[in-house]
Image 1 (tube, one colour):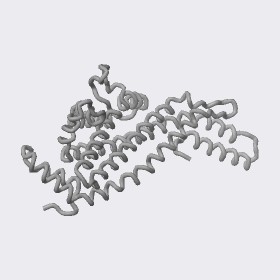
Image 2 (cartoon, one colour; image 1 turned 180 degrees about the horizontal axis):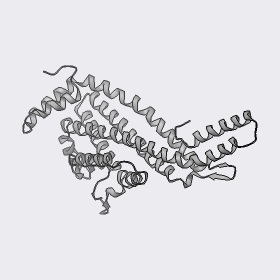
Image 3 (tube, one colour; image 1 turned 90 degrees about the horizontal axis):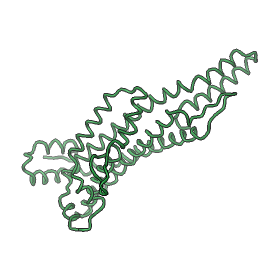
Image 4 (cartoon, rainbow, N blue to C red; image 1 turned 90 degrees about the vertical axis):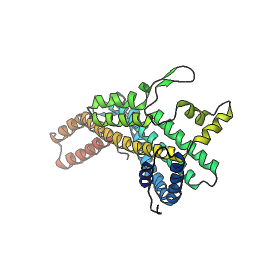
Length: 300
């Protein structure tokens, strides 16, 4: 017997104990479990946006700080530091763009799941399910891409995806451990095997000149299949964000070491100058502050 405290994982474990051939029984049990756990799920969903939106603001401010550095080179005596020439700056911009996208995806999934849980009629639930599926598939496409052909006949390759084109070269350059990247890649590929085919995806996004095909797609869509897929996708998003955040810290460290030397040379000159002690301390404090500002990407 399910209780009001039934959680998402309890539902999935329950489904795993059911004979996979008993599709109708499985659906009935799942729907009942979803109904019983609705309040718990709503409470969980209501935490996602308040938790994610401040992170989105933080990373956006960080990106804006980097854009400022790229357009405003600084001068220390005759030494000029032009951040447009620092590849780590470009790396950070690209990674932050990915994190910002993942943050939007997480919140959009939360909104669609809330719409499903609060829906009063069947079509509202079908529409919310379709949105959850589209967000999962299109989000995956942005991150890792699909292999295959587009409608115009051109090849759709994951070689141009964020994960392959952007992250892979950065990792090699900053000597970041490859094991977790490989593990996350394998998990993405495993998730992809569970996706519906491209025709299903196209109908959900673009409709069709034969509307009955869209109707047939809506009839087959159900929470029992979509929910576990969406949950695993969101878990993967969270792990990718954590991974990218650590990668940013590694890049920051490398960038700081590169930019530290010009400032250190100036501080050495101050320390060895014949200036009065109070003036030396004042100048040193000013340069220490400047050094921290331009070798760290924490938003001010």
